[in-house]
Every structure is written in structure tokens, then in C-alpha cells.
Amino acid sequence: MNVLMVGAGEYNVGFVPTAAGAAADKRCGVVAICLFDMRRRGMVGRILLADADGTRLPLARACMAEKIGAAYVGLDTTVECWPKDETAKFDPGAAVAAMDTLGAGDLVIVFTPDPTHFSIASAAIERGLHVLVAKPVVKVLQEHLLLEAAAASKGALCAVEYHKRWDPIYSDARERARKLGDFSFFNSMMTQRRVQLDTFAAWAGKSSDISYYLNSHHIDILCWMVEGVARPEQVTAAASFGVADAQLKRTGVEDTISLMCTVRAAASAAAAAPQPRLHLFE
Picture 1 (spheres, one colour):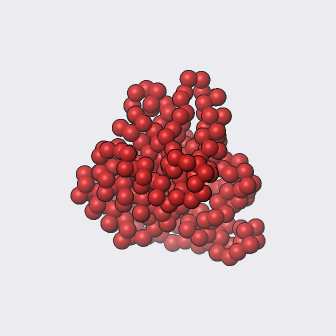
Picture 2 (cartoon, rainbow, N blue to C red):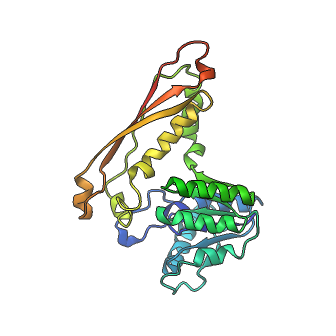
């Protein structure tokens, strides 16, 4: 299949504008490097890249050539870009224009600000394209249901892109945990450096927060660990503020978000003996 990456940023291609004041947390990106290797092995065909800001595309291509092409000899980093003219400052229709060059059954991978996910995914599904979307797929339940119905009607896959499930550290922890017997407690913490606030200044505390960006990985790992034997039943959360608000000079940007999740064993798993509740602190 052919694959379109939407968003010329850190997770797709490893690019962070120098003006943001921070280096990429994922130096080589996550998506593009995998696609280049899959193309080398004959598993994908065309690889496309679309971004609303065309001036970012030359920088993104240079970033991939330096961090991926120069490091992995023989790995081709060429991509077809939209908008074609990198001098176009802003083109919100670039992703749709790129989709129109694809055929039903091709794939679109979306790593853009959260409020844009629904419209981009909807456009892809309408064209019979499969879609992987960065978490959260959407933030409103009604939009989630609309995407689900649209994908079913078109016979397309629409799913969240949880790359941590393929991270050996996470997958190994999951396999070990499932062999430990009945769970009663799971505790995890995920943090990032304060400098990352500069990278995400445009949307931090606005279109998304650290619970979506960080906590969601460990919530997913918990659900994956107890898959088939238990399910989340109740979630409570608390946040703290101060440091991020001062650094970004606005209010409403959480420094920390702590979650407690109660998980109850499924009836079939609890039939033999009472199962303890499981609590997650994130």
C-alpha cells in the first residue's frame, strides 16, 4: 500500500523547529523511519508527507536525510510532499490534496494537533483509506462514534496509533505481568523535561494536556496487561499547576496529572474465586 504521513513534526519525521528552543525528544522520529525500512523490504509503495505549513517541508526533508539517511546507509528517505511548493506559507487543504492521489486501501497516518484529527480522519475514510491517528483520536465521544460508523460503512480501518505497544520495554513488561498471577496493584509514572514545554507551547493546555500526551500510554499498557480478564470501572484524577503556567505565561497548563483507576475482574475470571480490585496511579 501507499502511505501518507500528515504532519511534518517530531513523531512523523523527527523535526522540531529550532525556534521552539528544544531538540526532538524522538530524534529520528517514529513513523517515517519505519516506513522507509518497510519500503526497503517491499512492504509499502509511495510515501507521502503533507503539512499545512509548506515552509516546514524543506527543513523536514533535511532533518530526515541527516538523522535517518546518513545514519542508516542505503535507507532511502525521499518523500512526495504537499503542498508541492514549499514557499506556500499555509495550506489547510494540503492533506486532502495528497489523499486524492491515493487509492482505496492505502493508508493515512495522522500526527497533527488534536482539534484537527477528526476532519483529517473523516476525509481519509470518505476516500476509502485506512487511518492511524495519534492519541487521542478525538476528544469528543460523538466524533469518535461518527468515525467508527464511517469506517464501518467504507470497510476501512480507523485506529489509534499506540506505538508503545511495539516498544520492547513495554511489550516485555506486559508479557511478564500476565504471568505473575492475579493483579492487585499497578503503579507507574511518566515524565518529560521542562524544555519540552517550548516544543509544545502552541497546544499545551489548549488542545491537549499531559494526560493525553503521556498518561495515555500507561493507561493503555494497563488495559493491555489485563486484557480479557478485567476492565477499567472508575477513574478519578487531580492536577497541579504553577511551573508550566509561569514558563508559558498563561494559565491552565498542568504540571502534573495524577490518575487513580479502579479495575474490576471480568465475571468469567472471577467465577472461581473473588478477585481483588486493581488500582492504577499515573
